[in-house]
Amino acid sequence: MPALHAIIIGAGPAGLAAALALHQQSTPASPIRVTVLELRPTIQTLGGAVNLTPLALRYLDALGAGARLRPRAAKVPHIDMLSHRTGASLGRLWPDVDAVRVLRQDLVEALVQTAREVDGGGIELRFGVRVGRIEEKGDAASADGSVVVHFTNTTTAGNGSEETLEGDLLLGCDGIHSFVRSSLVDSGRTKTYSGRATAYGFIPVAKAGDAGIAAADGSPAVDVSTLVTAQLGSLLVTFFEPARERLYLATVVAQAEREEGRDGRRATGEEKEALKEDFLRRFRGGGLVGLEEAVQRCEEWVSFPVYMLPPGGVWCKGRALLLGDAAHAVRACLPTYNFHHPLANSLSTDAAAGREHRGGHRGRGAAGAGGEPARYAVGGPDAGRLRGAAAARHQEDVRRGRVPVGPGGRQELARHGGHGVVQCRVHLGHEPLEQGQLWAGR
Ligand SMILES: Cc1cc2nc3c(=O)[nH]c(=O)nc-3n(C[C@H](O)[C@H](O)[C@H](O)COP(=O)(O)OP(=O)(O)OC[C@H]3O[C@@H](n4cnc5c(N)ncnc54)[C@H](O)[C@@H]3O)c2cc1C
Image (cartoon, rainbow, N blue to C red; front, side, top):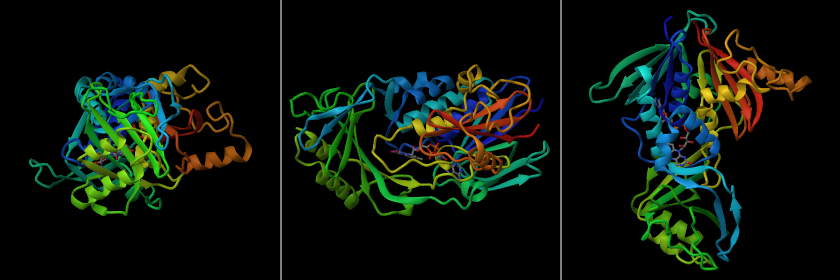
């Protein structure tokens, strides 16, 4: 049987996780081949330290990337909250959880390495290619249809040559500024700039594990991860590597939009000084000893602008499906930015999700179930709470490819053996909300 070819645009957490998850669904009888197209020539080194919740870690483990990632991360069994004014403890968030904080770059690297080593080379990663046009051929619901991606090869070897790639399925994992969303799936759903950016910096500590900041009672203010709550915002001070030799400081700042820095930028010159001054203005003084000095020692500042998408929208059309930030961007909130959301959306495309749902009450039509794939299951066990008008509304939303999901929602893809159908399930928090499916031919 010819392999089903899935083309993924974007090698961020969502695209790479989806590639691994699809590969896990591949069998000799029903093979899946995956090509990932990434704009950047290499893995991007810009990016803060991100918090991975137990759920995200569980998905990463199931995808085979967890073991690679954990040794690069700092375990975060809780987050302490301290008052900036008094230096006293305000409480402890998420006590005793199996969470970690790690550089975004390390997360992407772990996923890339895992993808490069999958059996049989079923995942091809191509860096340095800019997708410029997407074309759908034939009827999306027929086995003869396909999706054609036109891109420019910007690598030195490619020298700007134009190439095309034909596939059965397209996953738009190209982030908040998604070309797949704006050119194909939902051009009417436009991003807006929040007016805010996550600003962050890194500093070395004099002694491993000791942030050099003390709380009001003289105890170390940073065990692993601490959120300092002040009148003018919150400051995250956290370790993010197992050796605990560097601290990550982050807050949310007001910032005007600038086109050239929309994927984050290192601040230089006056902008760098202004960012540092902004941090100091908010977190100078107070009851914590050593905090101001820590901010003063930070020499490199980065800002990452936060864009937002209106809720709802269309997530899939024909053979194309949006995943990750392309479908549901993050919110402009505290810098305890939480990868549960994008990762749960992308990583739950895995075999573990199939296992999790197969035997339980959510099991209908789950991955690997075989046989005919479930049709939309509104009113059935997968959306058992939806009744009457609500059920009809959701059914219509799914039929039209519009799957409403708010913060905390997630999507799952599951391949049904032999049928070439990729099923999309949407969850809000832990509650299954809706499911639809994408016909991928063959
Ligand atoms: C460089 C970078 C740094 C970040 N730093 C932070 C941070 O410090 N703090 C924070 O809270 N969030 C940060 N984010 C956002 C956070 O990482 C995202 O919420 C999360 O990564 C979402 O994952 P994703 O895979 O959906 O999208 P992304 O991580 O945005 O990945 C999308 C990928 O698609 C690629 N791409 C885009 N357009 C095309 C195209 N036309 N053709 C081919 N490839 C394309 C991009 O280069 C990128 O690699 C950062 C994102 C990026 C890209």
